[in-house]
Picture 1: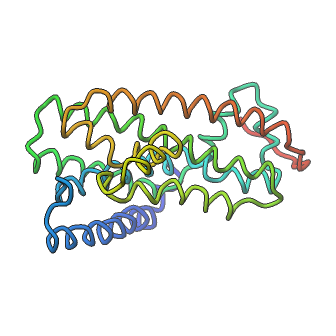
Picture 2 (picture 1 turned 60 degrees about the vertical axis):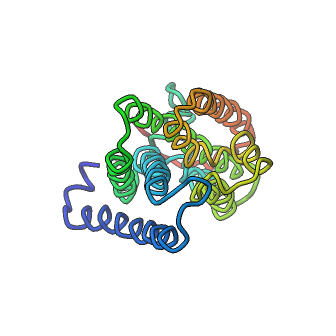
Length: 249
């Protein structure tokens, strides 16, 4: 990160460029709700909230745990060898092996949107604290699902594009208001593909002070962490060394 920040202009361009990109997407929703009004009790304020949660969790995953996204290229190039030789946790070594500076833009943008939502919606102190604390499990879920989709690289010769498409299947439903989905799809996008857990579900939990949703999001974070670690251990058994010479501290 210090190396990236040495070139300040390039670093700032990446950060603010990503923030501008996100603003354009949010404006589409703003214009939509201005034209059609509220939908199932959701307005522009809730849009800012769930877009903020998605941007924050993705930015946290990309900026600080980019290794979960880059695993397919590591496996394909044989760069995973040095991680397996380390006595430290392979899971954490993979996650923290890379950083993506543009993710800092998503991270900051999401945080700003959430602060704006807290003031626009006149949330109580309790609601504000609950929303902030839900950013942690949302980021954990985002990171671990990204890692799970990347594990396809152990079963295919080059799964870079395939893993990215799988991750898009997870992210796409989170970019829409959770109240739009019927009960069957809500069940799928919460318990099977936890897309709503990094989007609209935290907003629902805070807006209506639904403790069951709050607890569920944290439970999903622990479950997906356990699933990611177990699947990683199983998948590594299929890894064939690329005989890449190198070492990591």
